[in-house]
Image (cartoon, rainbow, N blue to C red; front, side, top):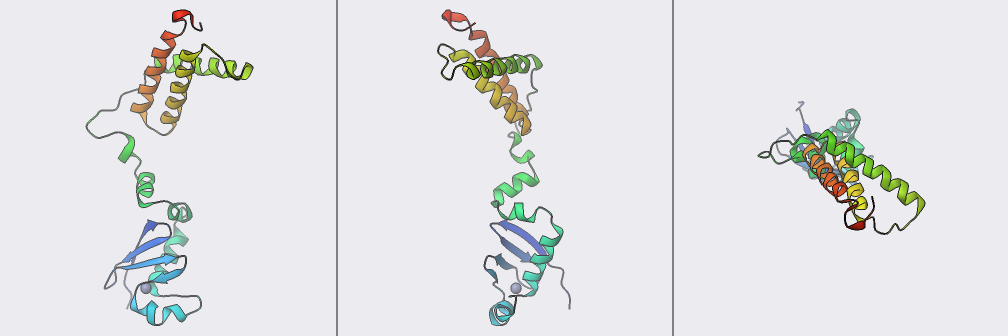
Length: 171
Ligand SMILES: [Zn+2]
């Protein structure tokens, strides 16, 4: 009798195997399953084995990301599988990045990096520093596909850039 078993990674090398008479839980470190076959016979086998462990092994063999997925929590796995889940809350529409905001932000970041290269503790450059940090955050968010967040960060950077030069600060 063959049953089609389904393996679900739960993170931390834990798996839920369903499709048989009852769902079972398999761990790989140490190798174990909570089914009767494993408890009474499988644990004495070399290597320890039951059909659920076999199913997990073949699941891992065909899943190239098995090792990556195994080391993540269930929530992280879901994010990887479906990143849109946390990109932005559903009710709020995606805000597109304003190209001008981004351009200004990146100039600020570049200038900040030049300044930091010259002196480790630049004084009186609070606005430029803030703009550069927002620009950096924007770039990271954009790389992660968090468009709305990136758009916000660039817009804030733009505001800080406008502040540069006022009150006798850095021009
Ligand atoms: Zn088992």
